[in-house]
Length: 226
Image (cartoon, rainbow, N blue to C red; front, side, top):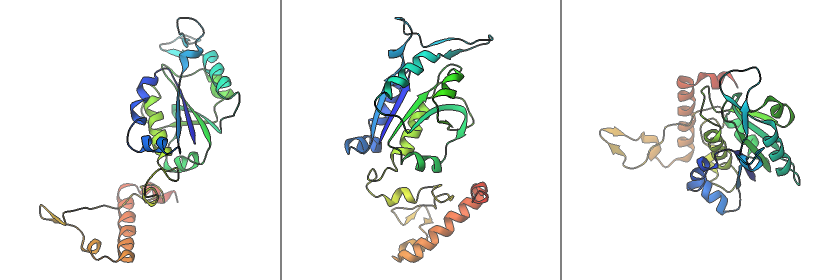
């Protein structure tokens, strides 16, 4: 899978992809991440990619021409399966979207800045608009890092134990159950005895019960959405 990111600040995105699971995914050849600096397609020698908005008002807008030229050039030989704009007014990102996007071959993420991008780019090119929450960031780079991590980790072969991703929170509209490790006793708190029985069937039943109970308590909306 290839994920390409169009941004005015590629420096913000180097570190998240050079460590841990994302690093291993790239070393295994399962995930390719390409950063593209939008200023490469600037309209002048000064690197301009933004301008004042029509109608007045505070804040600059990312212009049509640099974005359109960049997208056209990047997909001149191969089309993107998805062109995603990261924006506060997009659909809230969830595990279901991550699962869907992990099956794509090539996607482009557009990182907004300032007051956003010219609406005509959204009308002409963007196939999906995504928000990572009801708040505003300085730009789309951090949101892009979230998407890449969420998508990349569930590509088959990325995790050493693929069943790990299947038991993550939200995979079955349930939150993950509590987990424990050694020691069995810590500050008068004990590991639930059933986890020490060595009976996989009973352990799995307990985990399902705990996942359901936790979801009902903390996120009943997930169960209502089934």
